[in-house]
Amino acid sequence: MLSIFICEDQPEELESTTTFIENYISMENLGMEVVCAATSPHEILDYISESKVAGLYFLDVDLQCEMDGIQLAEAIRKYDPRGFIVFITADAKSLTLTFKYRVEAMDYIVKGDAYIKERISKCINDANAKYISKSTPLQDTFVYKLSGNTNKLSKGSVVSVDRSKILFLEVNQARPHSLIIYSENSKHEFRGKLSHAQKELDERFFRCHRAFIVNTTKITAIDEKGLKLKFANGDEIDIAAKYVKKIKLMLGKFSGQV
Image (cartoon, rainbow, N blue to C red; front, side):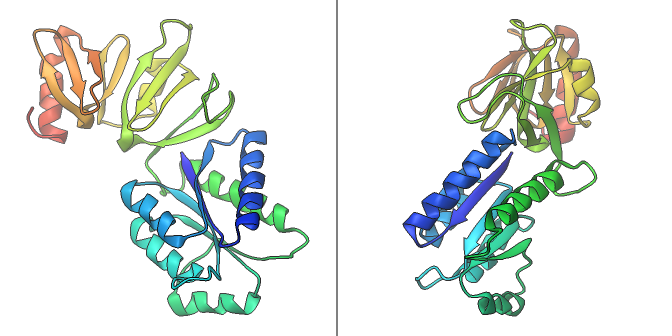
């Protein structure tokens, strides 16, 4: 999922921009979320230093503190080198500083522009398209469309998740032709079959049971007697007895021995 960050020192403008973006991604059913909207650049950096994210950043240039938006962008690049950065400023002349700091930006938007909402919308759409595109090596991603509502996203939203963060996929026994994907920080339902999903995944993933595909790099232990695979977050899934040896070999290849 592409995370959106907004940094604007004026609370009223921060609220206005955040509300517009949240309404837009909801209306367009985009698999994106505003995860941090702050007046302080340090709050943005604290968030991304703790969480590995792929982000779209809307940054005011003049933040009225010791760090301006361009310096913030430079710091962001250390944590998210391929993130999408959009500068918003009241003074177009200040944007020449981006060349000094060599900060690549997706767009430069001047406050007061009559088409500012259209410009923001275009940035959202362009970033989302690049993020989910399989031809763009921004992320090693698995893309799916939600078949049910979540507390953040509505049915029909297109979601892209980093394959390295997927724990496992499970057949949803309550709904025919429906799967549940479990990642490090989310759980979503989407229409599909395990056999089709397997084709979209790589060699790290193995169908260990008729109801499960597992990311072998995320397994922390094998309960051979109980026929369970365990994960760091406490989740457990079934494994067919005939695949125990195969999983152990894959663990040796991808994760080291358990």
